[in-house]
Image (cartoon, rainbow, N blue to C red; front, side, top):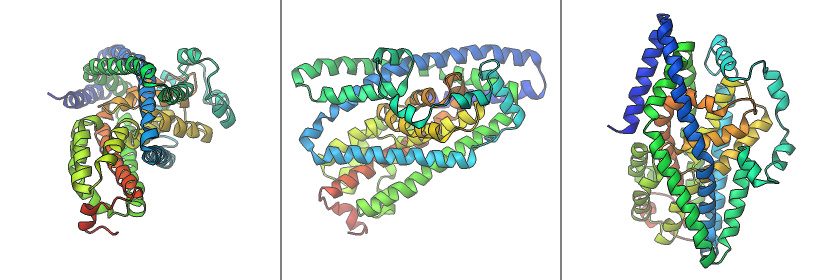
Length: 430
């Protein structure tokens, strides 16, 4: 049985048992579910434990690999710039939708919200005090540069960690191969080991989902499900809008292609990405489709698409923005504009380190939550609210990720003077 099937079964069972305990007022069952939540909390601690080694290693390896930019010149610069811009646009779309649909009660009753906040906020901590602790925009920007990287690691200061890792990786790309390769080999080993740890941890995900969602439903009832439904619909709406607006505009005006013909050509890639939830697993088919169906040269596809599977995570970044806003609304209340700017910055940078494997986005979400939420709120607490529906949303956002990779390849290829004759023969404008 596939892992996502087990997670779905665990989600349904957790909701069902939690509802029975809540609606029938079975005190012993509520106490049991609340007790086993400790297992779910421990599972989240395991996930959090892997965050820093995974993000640091992924960013350093990914950024250092951009040393190829010195060889491919224009292609590398265009690709990275395009990826960063579309990722920032995706995060912005997520924040706009969140401000429209998730502000205030996030689809929950006042009683449920107060209960959740009372459970996760520090004793005696008020929302007014939390707002007063929020740093200003200048302070956020100034704090990106760490005076002591080791201290930033110890304090889980993710913006500083992201900045240093990217800066170090860029510097490493300029080191001679003889000295660079051993360092890259070390961080590649760390990255692979971290991925194996994630694989081990994810095998426990169904049990954690049951423990976490069961406890929440048992304590706060079906109202939590309404909030989850609103959250999930906002994520899917954001992914759809990004595809229909951002990618359609890029295809029409930058790649000079018919967007609907293009999407029809790549539908097999989208389906494989949806079913596997992995950009890396889809990569061979993505490259084949780019070359055989769209007519993109191997020179462009072999560089842009593998790079995209590493650093182009529009769907993941958009989801992180919505998830952070939802969790913040539930646990703290509406975030300030400064905090939302921090989400844009952190999610854009963190998406570079989001590995193209199933459920890696949930790890990067912790990075964004650590930076966006007040220090007195445990970011891992919010993960319990959305973990049950994450797999379904993971499938959706991975489909958007690979669509963005192929769109970028088409844009870069056209900018390099390629004709993309196969697509034009299908009826796209020249």
